[in-house]
Every structure is written in structure tokens, then in C-alpha cells.
Amino acid sequence: MNTANQDHTYYSVGEYRGVRRIWLEGGALAKRGFTKGVRYRRETDPDNSVIRLIADPNGKLTVSGKEKRKGTGEFLPIIDVRNQEITQITADADEVRVDFGDGEITISVAHMVQQQRRREENLREHLKQDKVTEGTLCSGVGMATLALHEGLAKHGIAMDTRWVMDRDAKYLQLAMDNNLAVSDRTRIFTGPLEAVEPKLVDSVDICQLSLPCTSHSSAGKAKNKIKHAEQHKTDATAVYGLMKLLDAINAAVYCSENVVEAAESATYTLIKSTLHLLGYNIAEGILDSNQSGSLEHRRRYWFVAVSAGLPMPDFNDIPVYPRAHERLADVLDPVADDSPMWAENTYLREKELRDIADGKGFRRQLLTPDSERVPVINYITSGKVHPRFWCARPTGKSGCLRWPSRPGLSSAIRRWSKARVLRRAQRRWGRALIWGKAGALLK
Image (tube, rainbow, N blue to C red; front, top):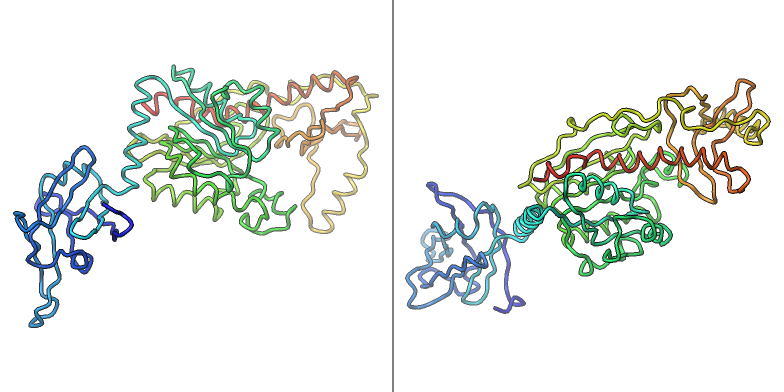
């Protein structure tokens, strides 16, 4: 049938005396020739989950109707589809789409229900073969991708990374060169999510996404002089890119990580509401260094959206991992008192005093080798690590824990090789801890 000349209505499947029922009435029937008294036949196509109602003068069924207003002789046509064939076609689906064409009506399971069935069937079939497919949005170098790859491998499940997406080509190049979860078969998408056409994206069993956090964090809002994440000039529209890709990805499981402030944002409220509409249950919570076993105190907001027909994870069941290191001193190499790593950093002390006087937010966080946790380590740029903390000496001087690019400072490089492990472990385990029992959970 030519769908270009059809009307489409979405109906809920009801029930009458224990039998599933689809009740059709009104002008949509009359417009297509199904007026009161017209005869028709019903055809059932179980293979395609379709019921067809076809106008036929020799048909065994008749359109019924009720008078619009008593005495007018005008009738509202009614077709009551109520038999066991509906159960055969719709199964447990609560919504159907009805396509009204001239002389023919087609009833099929609604698209969102079909999508849910498809993704759950695909995942179950893949797990029978001890494999899953995966894709990552806003992947960076793919730490989350690698974490999931390793976590599932521990349970004997092979993960095939079908694609990764990021707007930064440098990160993607690092992933291609170094990430074991990114293979020659992995498709690389370089550009903002908003630019990616859904038709290019394969459906996967598991999709990981971490939308840009700059617009959500307190520091990012202050730097960009915005009150709401949705005011960011470039990052705000990433949610649009995600939304238009959801139907194509149709993952059985979505996993997302972001800063704590994102949890109550309009962006994430919209994402979670949309996933609920599409047939997902969501578990969410705040995870920190207790779950990662790291010195770095990185609190992050996580949610896991699981297709409604699959078992849900329990955030209360996430284990607490023992720390690999108890004190900051455990990951630092000795630094001599006359080392140039130590400095007065007078300008920062003065800036802190000015900010306090002006009601601004900059504060130095001075730590000692006995500190049992450290604030979040920032990203690495221009050969330097940008921490939010300083290591203080009793003399009052402090040393910025940085990663010098000068080759002569090998001890500092070794120190930060260890310190980087904290973040790598945090970022890997931060994702892997949810998926540590992923194989058993999904099965």
C-alpha cells in the first residue's frame, strides 16, 4: 500500500472479558470507506506481526456504528477487533499503530515496542554466543570503552566496538594507536554529535555516553559566565545530537557518566525522560573514590538505562574496592629541598586572598605527603598536569604537582607516571565498577 496517502493513529491495546481488544471508531474510518454497514475481511500475518482489514463486499465482517445524535441518522463507524489473533500479533505490546488507507486498514505493533523487542532479542542472542556489540559517544581516548571491554572479558564475553565518536581528532588518534578495545574494524566518527547522520550509525547492544561536562560543572559555568548548562555556546546542543541518534543506536543498555551537577540539569532530565518513554528503566547514583580504590576523590554522577525487559543493576550492590595506596606519599618520589619543583608561588597566594576579599571561588588546596586523598586531577595540556592541589612543606613553600616537559626531570616524570595511574584507574574503574559483574547482570 502507498503510505504517502495514509492516515496514522496510535492506539492503546485494551482488554474486554480477558481478551485483548483494539477499538477503532470515528471519522478516520469513514474517510477511508469504512462506514456503518460496509463489509470487510480480516487477514492476519503473524510473520510480520500485522493485521489487515480489507473492504470486501463478500467479507464476513461488518462495520458497526452508533448514532452521533439521536434522530439524525448520522452514524459514527466502529470496528471492534477482539479475538485471540490480537494476542498472537501484539504479544505483550500495549501500543499499536493503525494505518488508514482507502479500503484497507493495517494494524501493527508500534515502532517503539518493535524497537524494544529488537534490541532485547539481539542482546540475548549475542550473549548466547558470549559476545556483545558496543559504541561510545564522546569517547575521548576511550577509557570507558576499554574498561567495559576488560570487565566483560573477565566474564568470558567478547566485546566488539563497532564505533566511537568524538569531536577531538587528537583523542581519537590516541584511541586508534593505543586502545585495545578499538580495532581496525571499529568505525571512527570525528565531529560533534549534532553533525552525525543517524543512517550512518549501527545499532549496538551497549552504548556509553558522557556528554561534555564543561557546561555542567561549577568551574565551567563560572569560566563561561553562564548560570545553566544549556546556555553554553557549543556544548549545550550535544543533547540534540544524542536525541536524533537514539533511534538508530537502539542499544539494550546505555551507560552515562558526568559531573555531579549534571544530575539535576535540564539536559539530563530530558535524556532520562526520553529513555523512559522509549522503554528503559534507569538506575542512577553518585560514585566516588570508595568504589574505585583511588586516592583521587572524583565524585561523579552515573546512570544506567536498561531496556525494560532486561534485569536492572542495583547501585547498592556496587562493591567498595580497597585502596592501592593509603597516602599521597605512596605515589610520590622523593624531592630534594633544593629542587626547583618547590616554589613560593606568591602570585597564587595573593590571588587567593584577592578572591576571598572579592567573594570569588579560587582556593589553593595544600596537601602533605600524609594526605589520604587528593582532589580531582585535571586534564593534561602542553606537557603539564593541571591539578587543583599543591604539596606543601613545613617551610611554607609549596610545589605544584606538575609534569614537566623537560627531559632532565626524570624523577618528576616517574612520579606523575604513578599519579596518572590514579586517574586512569579512577576513570577505568569508575566505569568498570558498574560493569564488573556485567556478564552475570546481562545474562
